[in-house]
Length: 114
Length: 522
Image (tube, rainbow over all chains, first blue to last red; front, side, top):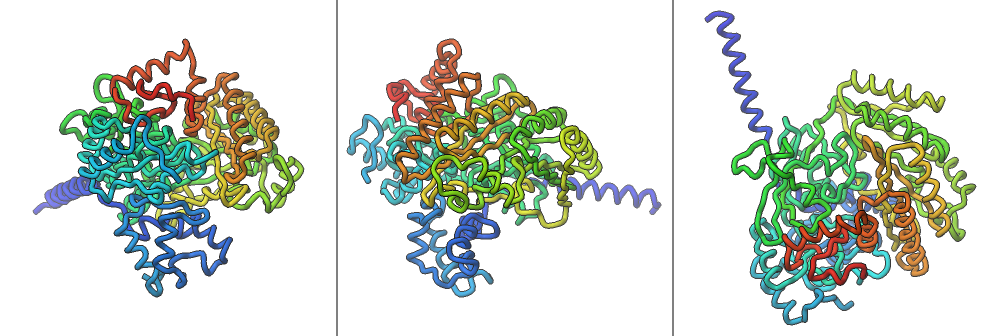
């Protein structure tokens, strides 16, 4: 096997790999659901909810995932009816099934460690 | 609170229509209680929320369900108001122009249908938000950045259809739409451009297709419901550079525009350049009472103290450059040279390089929500309206617009948030009027100021590119060439495509024959 032949084979296999990659580059799917998909924009990082709660309640209450005082009825009430700066969320924006999931996530101990 | 019915319908006919919708989507996706509908009110209502209150909402999960709903709406003659995520804040949120319309909530259609990395586009459904796409790209290591608006809570499709603006080279979002699928008011499904071919993989890379192009027809429009859209993205740059300068005085906006407009036109700076006054930052991080408790607009002397304390110039300038390091550096030098003709100040540089964590700001393709705080400038139950005329990218035009707006805001007792977004040849002006929803006298003044701003701009030949529900007719009235020939054209097309007037009656001042008598009513 000559060096040139090996080089050609290598080039060909690389081209095939690139071709395969081009196909794999085209992807689609569903966005995140639950807390990460529906709440995190405002309630994580520099979010509006984090800032509002920090100003009103202090640093230790600014992140929902670090709180232990949130109850299922309270979370449901706030999501569906709104509370202060937070607007009500429709049953499309936070579907019932995902609201249940969010409530379970936020009311379990150490939610933020998950 | 009493929910309205659609005009010309009684309770029996309305309930029959809702029952028919439920046969398509299931009764759990038809909403008609006050609690469920409160999510669709205008969060920042100017006046009473009942002016733009829906009668119900229906949420299809697929194109087929949507087609069926449109056919039933024709049969029962029910007006629908489509929303993607309904976050058109400052312009009406999710609320309909015509009270009693049924919200057609497309939020369940939330698939990212395709992402093409090499050709830098994503194809999405209406419910996909900016945060969704950001998270999707991040989770899947996709080296694309979505152009992010100043507030990232909305949807890609809704924002682009309303001609929204974002950061980055593809920031003029309406111009970076390529290929739509649309359901017409009759329920018929069409695809624009090359999408009209049954097997085209060029649909989202070439806009025109063959024959007349219709995509503009579905923007700010009531002529169809967009169910998927090709959105051009920014390939992740090797380097993103932010250039800062605190430009000290009000009048400096003149030379800023004079210096930067040619650089936008020649491509040294790509994408919209947003220059806001310091009040944007002050209103986004504090409340008015933190600084001043007197009546009327905050006096200039107090504003100067605020700027001094916060370390702001009147115009905190931030310019973005993206791309290969050599090109970014060369562009930096060109910008430095252009600004050095007017100031001795040096631009500060902040670089992000590929492979490092991104600063959490929309300039770097990261969505944020905290600018919503601006609505709370005056009270916890605050709101804001955006006055958004378009002017040419010229020194005299921008100085005159700023001077007149500042005077009018002051005359009516409001603090001026003012932002100028440079395109290649024009400027989108956004002046945000904040108010306390619990103060009826202030709401009256806000109305009066807004109408005055519209009149003032009209007299100088400037029209708004977008407006709140309450002013859609007033702004449409200013587009009056040849005795409102454009309105007649719009409504001729409207009546042809939507003879029963079921889709978004009154949007952008276009009224179908059936409801035309309601033009100008609240």
